[in-house]
Length: 387
Image (cartoon, rainbow, N blue to C red; front, side, top):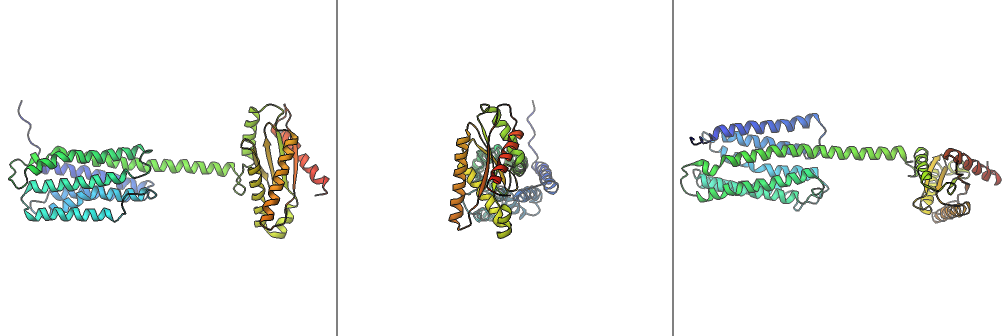
């Protein structure tokens, strides 16, 4: 079997440039057509710079200065990706301040330029220095990514961290091979340039594009879940008093009654007496504060398994499972005393509350019990001469 022909380095670099162009193009297309987040365009810029790094190597024979330029554009990749990570995970506490990232890039580039200017023809020295600096940048970036608080929960961050570590490991043999050739003529450049390592790094870059997109979609999914949760809150709760609205209260109360012993639950309707007078004399803001105070006092007094909701206006309703009428009246008295205490502490006029309390019958539906509780409430108001 004839030996395999060595890879033609310029052709390989051209192919790598095309692949990197596709990666950068995909990132740009997604950024222009889809919802993205802070840091995404830093990731995209890192891909474009990496592509120009590969293209620049094609002209290093006629323009030797393209070598350090290509090195700079290559070294920036993990650090620019880190800048994007800092913005994408802005609430995370990274181990170093942001200025360290560009400072590390500048120091690494200056060190490479010093080695390159000392002997531009020393291929071993150039490749060893570049590999060492690249390993340093990748290790630093992996160290920073490990500090992101979400990395244990996000499989994509874990994959990104593994990718960075792998990029470090594949460059170590190349660095030692180049160190052995430092200052000596290189008969076979492929022995230290190791095209397979270049291919592996390009594969890592392509994989990083995939990870960036997945991180973006993961954040979008999280935002959608949070939006859905907030919409559920808006649909189920009264935003002023933070208790369930009529519909949500009825849903929860119906489910609770199915689990309770029939005939052992109490429904209690209550409202603020002369509520219109409160708003007329003190304004709607004072009325809102009164509603929030009553709802807060009810939540504080009721047990965790009890339910309270706002039916509308100044009328509230509470379901007390496994409770007697006597116990419910005691709860009502505690709510009144709690409201009086809060109003007194705020040096405000006392509020008067009326209650309608009924025992839910075994075969009685929740709407029927609610109607009876409302009738009892109206009777309580009338017995006190209130209209």
